[in-house]
Length: 396
Image 1 (tube, helix red, strand yellow):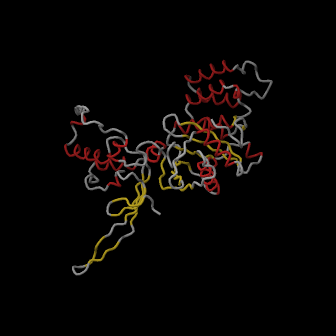
Image 2: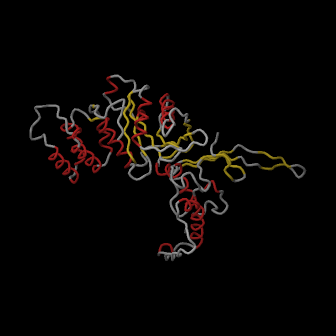
Image 3: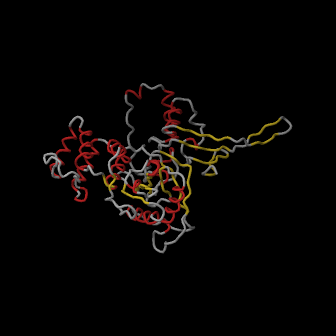
């Protein structure tokens, strides 16, 4: 984890209803895992405030681990563990590091807990993307933010996705009162970045903070790499918004296939197409009983849907926006008049392309005639459509 310049990891936040809610959000197993890791770290050992505490209540780190492990299997164990953390072992409060670890664990274990927006990094022409790793990004961002407000930064490599995930906790104004409180959610920001990508993904933050962060993120990325210090990198917001970091990494990450065509063409980006004409053709699996009972027409629509959207589940997107600038002809037999109506189409739902795929299977949408931008084949989620093709990847 990268060191924090503004507020140290050891800075204590006294307990409040907010810290109790924070501890209660993670699962019991996750909470016990975190507590036992704290008991194994000398700088996070329990801090007992009252020297008059019952000596039978106070336990050594090893005995405390055993006590918390018993909470893992017992009924009511999570509540008992939280009570002991707050009332006995860390009764003085939790450090910024402990709070960040709990919040980060919840964010990773609950993938849809945050809403992310993609922002594009605009480098000067012919500039290769810089190598980047999590501690460097956290350290550089903390340096850039320090003149503006007190903050704490915690960063990790995501355990299952190829991205760095940063948590920024803002204490502004930096009064003794604000420094002693866990900030509200609007002052806690998550930033994610895939190495080799020209995008960053961030949770929502408004007001002057957004402009400051955009400036500082551009400064950090401009200072990475040989001879890059002081290079101007502009950060511009995009229309891509989703609750799924996995979708962000798939569509705007740095790996092969990121930002490329989706739909049925996604198999090419994922190396799921035979590389050699000599490769053996797999024998198709026999239809199971349920599939065999399907109506012939339904099976036909299912095959069409899989041909248009792909066999795998489409990327999880909650909103897709397109503006149609199609030319229509009207008039009488003597003269045709062309006009372009203003028409914007928005699809919203828990998974837009999965929902459209289901509508094709059910026969609500004609899977043969539907345009490619409705299937993810164009590789974009926002844009302008002319003659059935995406001609611009934004609505501006």
